[in-house]
Image 1 (cartoon, rainbow, N blue to C red):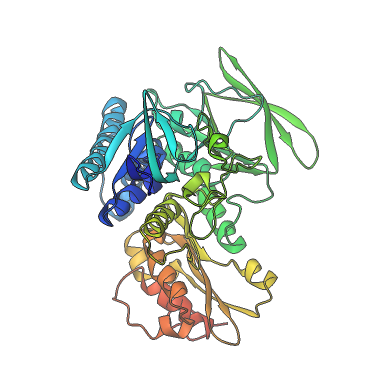
Image 2 (cartoon, rainbow, N blue to C red):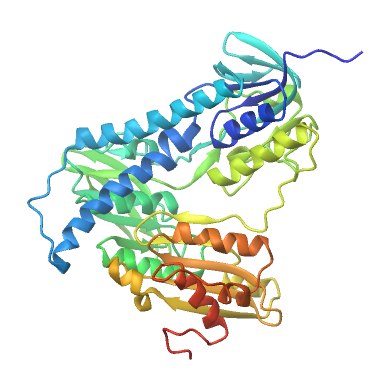
Length: 467
């Protein structure tokens, strides 16, 4: 006799991965509930991807206005209404999270509110009620990692959530601890809004994982805009005083220590999986020492009917990875032949210029034993980039020498994240550099830079000297 459950699928967490999983499972005819202890949309919609992009856009408008005089367009004195800025940003978040709620209703997904905690492998307590499900998807996401010696108060010392609330006045001196995606995006926001910004990174290079040449070009562009960058530097402790936050910085190589004063300090040293209160052990689910709940290519945990997706499952902690994994888990539960088999997962820093990449870096390709050749097209040779006044950056293509197979694409420049779609599709389709070079691209566009980088692989780019 088949056991009866309240739901076919219970999704724990309504972030990008969770709500994608819930909706797809419902589309496939399953009875679905989605539990969320905070707000639907998760970190990404509420305190991550979306609000940061709103602030980035606002900051870039300020920067654009400053440089408009270069082509004869002048404005009056710039003034910022901080309350209106924060309200506009929050309005976008409200609209999107409301949209997720509407999608739940349209797809007949039951929204359960409260902390989810396993009772056993089919039973979960959500707030004051207890529900059962044949299959369960864990999509609890992640939270900012803490740094010893720096206690976050969300005012003078903030994490990525606190940094989203722009103070009035804008802080004169800003320290970003961590030279990754989060650190640089906020550095860019505050720099454009008038702060003097310093970014420190413990590692020898910022944006670990990106191509070395792209990072070098990106770093040059950030410094050109006035952002100070110090690598192999760490923050040991911070003390709040009347004149600001006194932070002890240490040179990792020499051990030399100095104290610098800032008005606001952002702790952006990464994120950690969120499993607090989940009581996963009651379901027999494996949780690693670092807090991850590992999953296979079908997103199954060690308990076959329990799945793990997104940040809580593995790195990289990216919304688009979580979305894909959510769809895979839902389809597997519905009996479809699905698995996570992406050739590459794109990464983006949404500054101006953007830094975006997909596939192998040049060094990774060499380390894997490929015989590598590259093609690079500088945006200084792009007519479209010139008209945008954004000529910093390039498109770099990494290709297997003997077969011409595309291995990776790395872009520094305006709208790099949008240009990356073509590169990702090319990688998934096992395209060659010649395939891209033979494809007619509209003129004048930034997309032509991808074409010319492909041509540069074979020393046939038209608008640069092919050395």
